[in-house]
Length: 394
Ligand SMILES: Cc1ncc(COP(=O)(O)O)c(C=O)c1O
Image 1: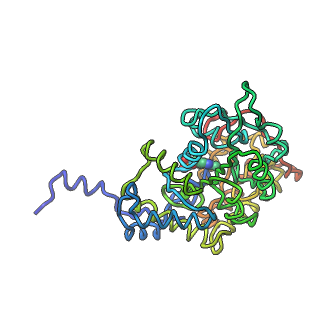
Image 2 (image 1 turned 90 degrees about the vertical axis):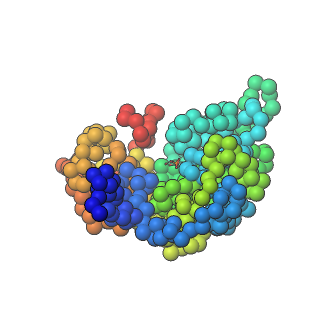
Image 3 (image 1 turned 180 degrees about the horizontal axis):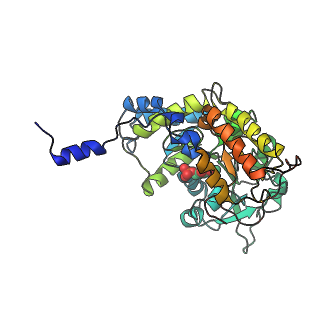
């Protein structure tokens, strides 16, 4: 029997390749973000053998295993799988806050204020107060004390949650400082949330374990779909009560999933294989990316380039303004070399590390084209002024 035209057209349209190829996929040359990592064959294999029960009914073993594993890794009572980092942050804040007037205090560069479509305002009605860290890198207790509202004066919007992001722009907020802020918050009855989309990187760097950091917070959200390479998802961890409430809020905004094993199976592989099996990322793949990020930053500063931020983990922020190079030109140089770039932020995720023999010589040539002829005086950190966005051209 011969195929009709329609049958043969749909056969032609069907993908003939397996796209689950990790660093051999598009993510392997994409330095715009660690969200670009391509999911792997072992994630696909895990999906093929996952359970397919209903998670709104709390019945899916693959999902419940992932939630309890992440709760154990972070030393929390419970976990909740959520569709995105944004959803994790927003559910956390909605669950920690109760009745207005209430305020959230955070770094002025926080994802929750800059990149979550104003969700804190619409979902919680909280007043967000942003703080510029005096040291240019991370908030200190002194920054918090200078901006927190603790009184009950009728004119005041009292601070109820301190929300910290770690890493922020790839930079680590040290454990000692987080502990100081947490002790202060507890003393004054304030809740603590951590946007830990990349807390995995902090733990892998040796700055403290997931448990060390998470113990300072009421809630922590961590992403599977960034540096860990999963296609979808994040986890929110916290006490049983807060997570129970967050599950309720998740349902109310349409985030309750049915056969969620399809996504949670891949997320579990991302945790085990990319982060590693222990709370410090033991046996994982992240540590090498930090070493490579240092090498990339040295390549740039040795040519006289400056950095916008210090390099603590997997991000290198090149100061293109100082180099007299527009983002558009830098991106065009990347395109010619087969690399995807976005402004001066380079994210050295684990698939870049796996493709380093291809990527690094090309980056070196781009750096030379941009900085050719400059002296050897680079390496200092220029401070970033004014309102900026990763996604909008300035
Ligand atoms: C620090 C941080 N938090 C939260 C998010 C939100 O994650 P998602 O894009 O999954 O909503 C991002 C996204 O890049 C992020 O960088």
